[in-house]
Image (tube, rainbow, N blue to C red; front, side, top):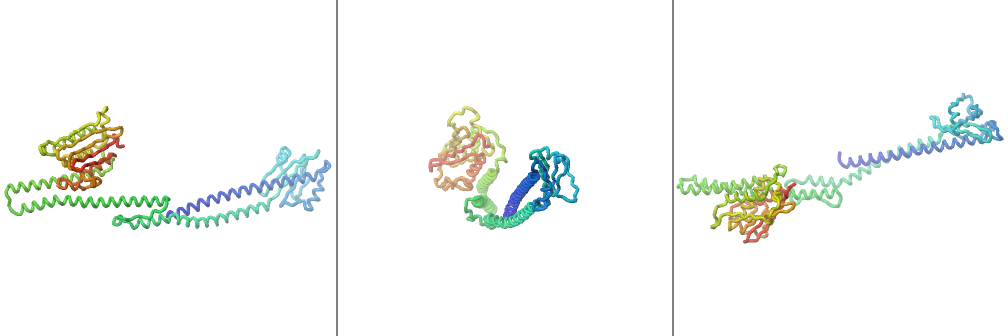
Length: 463
């Protein structure tokens, strides 16, 4: 069922229940008012009869008979019974009818002074009236014909009003609901036209300040994020294909040229060395793509343990020295690790994280520091605070152009001044994703020609 039908139906049902409640309450109080008014009228009637027939300490029944024959009786199906205190029937307006009144009822009236009761054939009132030394019991019963007719008319009017009101409410509720959900219908129609091919520059109307407008605005934001994700994916696939094709094409072409004729041993060795270099380049690229894919996973996929960051940095320093040549420009590779302040407790140096990912993070940062540094030295400083640990990796290399600082964390992006240095532009992208996975922060500052500093802040507890 559509929302507009649900709104109209809910509106009609709620109004129907509300109208019924008011109608029932109205009818109930009207019936109670009629009953109280008629019983009061019967009581007044009974006391008036008693007052008329008692005169000079005697009960004048003949006077009551004369009045009964004239205009005294004005109630519908009225019954008048008069008893003396000994329960002898003094007068009855019923002719040829056996009259039997319960002694219990007469006792009750005599004891309490009055009695009222509603029967299926009408209401009945009894009073015990005393004037001077004379007392009588007068019982009057009648059927409130006009009162019940008015109640029946009221019931019919209420039923007709409810039926008409419900029909009108359904119609009005439908039009209101249709106008309310019209922006949603428009939003649905617009969403149906959006697909993966027209995400760019496409959006839905989001005017106003209501929830539907907020939904449209959030949907536009989601479209923009999807568009950016698609563009990034296309760029990633294109760059990855290009990077993979380059070493493969070089390997294939070299092997084809080599197999075209016989070569000397020295030529074979040179070609194999070149192919090995291209294969290593291809291996580095494959490892980088794998690390990038792993860094995209949710932190729930990884096991997080307590890791001492000083020990991890020492281990990474030793590993990075094995990768780089022992001597560059007369200088051996060196990792200079320093503390900005002396830790008082071991817990200040502990970070909760995934050891494998953190090794990839700092290995890439140290690898870049050695790769782009002229003195083959990486400077590492460790500082710690109440909630996090700060680790800086600095080099004295070529630096990064100011306009390129906000692009270096993008996959496959490489600075214009390092194009001749071997690399694929994946390392820093992987580093950023690993830091974000640990709910940390990474930033970069650089001076062209003097060096670059990467600052990594990791919380003690990532949760």
